[in-house]
Each structure stands twice: as structure tokens, then as C-alpha cells.
Length: 55
Image (cartoon, rainbow, N blue to C red; front, top):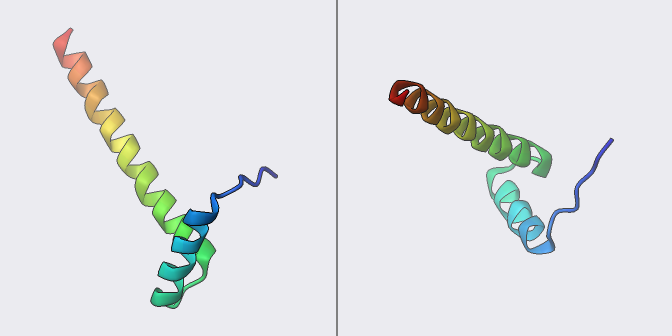
């Protein structure tokens, strides 16, 4: 399985936020990634819809 290297300055911030929320770092990262990916898909869908309307 692919395990990307996370930059140390991000790891520190992730640790601090997860600790403040009382959750595991992996849970925080999964939540952040899920939200970001959903936003990216939403934006792509909006752009695709605009492109189809312009044709």
C-alpha cells in the first residue's frame, strides 16, 4: 500500500489539532481529506455543468 510522506510541519499541526479535539490523527486526516475531495468534486461538477451550457 502507498504511504505518502507528510511534511513535518503539517504533521505537527495535525497532531496539535487532533489532540485538542481528542481524536486520532488518522481520523482528523481522513475527515479533512474527505471534505476537501468532496469540495473538489463539487467544483468540478459545477465547472462541467457550465461548460455544457456554453456549448
